[in-house]
Image 1 (tube, rainbow, N blue to C red):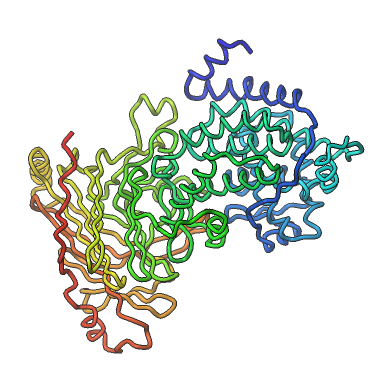
Image 2 (image 1 turned 90 degrees about the vertical axis):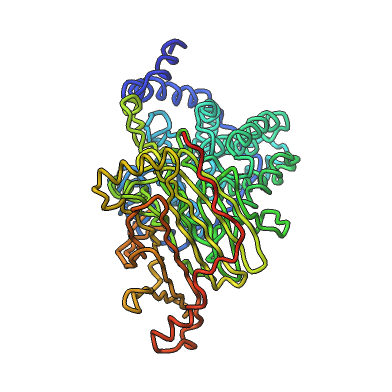
Length: 624
């Protein structure tokens, strides 16, 4: 293909560009990489640093492949690539080969299935372009799993690895091993060409990490490794924020990025090559950010399409990363704040939706928070539900699916719907709020965190400020949500009131509860009791609105939906300054509580809205 045609394909938007890539550009690149691929040798044995699930492995051997919370029945290993997938997300996960670790966890019996399924994939896709199979991010993760589980897929590679270390010539590989090694080399060749086309962030890190891993495993020469090391250093520079967060602002992507770099660190050690200083520094930064996000149950909060993650996986990553004994208090570049006291942890999103390609997974979660007490999550966001239908995914991206305040049901971040961008298929991108700001202050009796955004300024003239306090012992968690209209905002607000015949602008603060929390409205609607599974009880009260419990959902990973409830404080803005105040007070263990509901409320009544802080409300974000 001529350079001019390739350039035209890159510059042309919509279906035409996709058609050119899928029919001409990509198939050509895949076949060219296959033709250039050398069989190579695996110079070292590289073990997978992430443990699999033996239960899922046993299910797979029995004929059921569970991915993203969904099952597909397979008659034999090769049928993975012929079965009708339950969802596009299931198919993508299958092509990533994330299930190899599960087969490895089974022990005896998993290797044969891994070998047959891998060879079937190679025969079907190695020279035929498929948009899912050869997606850059998917192919990169597949290569990482192939190399990490190489001995599971091709057992005689164990002999190859031992002899290759001594420099002996290797002969007599089984045909399957030769095909497998050629496919690894093909992936390395093709992914190297895709680095510049990959999006900065986790995708770029995964593509470059896969190429680096292949260079270490296939070649092991200092010159080759040094060359790809430069690519890795550049990828880290453009993919991580100054505070160590990942561009997409997803907490689970921090874990994924750290796991990638820990794999590379293990690979460097296996080849006896010196680990680059920049790699060591990046691992330390990512580990510090992951510890910042870690909730009481060991997982991470669900912001911007992120998953909660099993606590064991976070533990595994952090166990292999350095720790200076300090937990970060804020991520100013990533847009998050953290307060903790006693056993209680609260993490708030105080930033704008991510830009570029990351805007397509962004959520309208500004000033939303998640809260855990001990190892139990209490207040959460609804999740991403990436394996759910598109209508559900759209709902879960909106502000009402997050624990924040919403004006008139309008999300703080909105889809980009202009005709120009819709023509390029970019109407799924969320943008906003225009301006955000956050501060944090520690006091003798606790810590405050304050955030503000002006997402409602243009339409309603309002600026939202959320101020939250958590006591040293964690038993007192309270907040103030303020809506204010000043200067030009006041004129916009008055016009809105006039249009509504001065009935007021509706707004509501929502607090989605984890499904394991039992909630009940008590004291004639003046309070809500929250009972946690381990017996801990909290009482929630409010001032300024009407208190109620409403249905909610919770999707900690991919699927399915779990039913739950949310606390809703609703009110109407009728003047230029409106405020809701709310407080969560821990009462104690269930066995120690008075049976009388009124006595229970009285136990939590201790000055529920006391201020005691000289931290003033933030100034409104600047007018635009």
